[in-house]
Image (cartoon, rainbow, N blue to C red; front, side, top):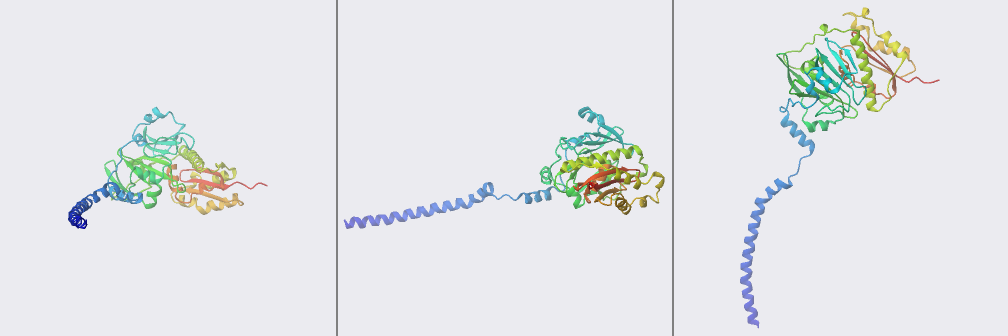
Length: 364
């Protein structure tokens, strides 16, 4: 019995040795397999994805000099076409107003859902200024956030374009890249995305031809060859100034509506003040134009006319179009969005655009 037991013990020790060797070899094979397979497994299934901001920065670094101009897929396709190409699809305008440089404004829509004004010269579309949120503009739309825009592609700071046979280069400032970024398309056109500095969303879009963009004089031309706009050759007249007034009123209403603010009402007092402030054509010449109307003079007039109310104004002496006026005005003080300002007057002449604002008069 004991022998048997000892015998069995001896046999067990030999078996243990063999089993131990098999286990060692097996573990070694498993270890080798894991050593080779684990990196592949991690690469394919467990790689940690970078955060969206890191990924976007990497994508921007890679694509900064690639991708532009973009293919034509939306409203930019109308640039360079006859205005009849637009009216055939969208109908006739609400009005046709006079602009400068022998051009016209074709205005469609009346509110924040459908407003668009089209710059036309010799029956060819040069620009489309769009505030209507229901207009299907293409890849980029009103209401987009900057993240939405970046999902469609990066935002560049430098652009190359040609007018005639002359090449030009544009450079955007940091503020412009954030508030009015520029996007270039293959058909010699651009769009400016107009960002609301409060909601951080696109409130409007301005499509322009190469020439119309340079005429705007908004972005810096950094090429060796400067671009000169011959303003002296542009004919400004009363019809064009009246059209500017209509556009200013419409755009003010649309922008206030989109913010959920009270609509402006015209004030007889402010209208009288504006007409007194605005110099007549006989009072303007090259020497006195810069001094006839000033911030100080406007402030004094407002104190005289409405001494018991808070007031504000928007004044510009070098914008030849209303879209250009709002490009500048909305980056400075944004007084048009002050909710306590509910009364206004608008006037315009050959040299100035003027908006007077005040709060509602206090009742007796």
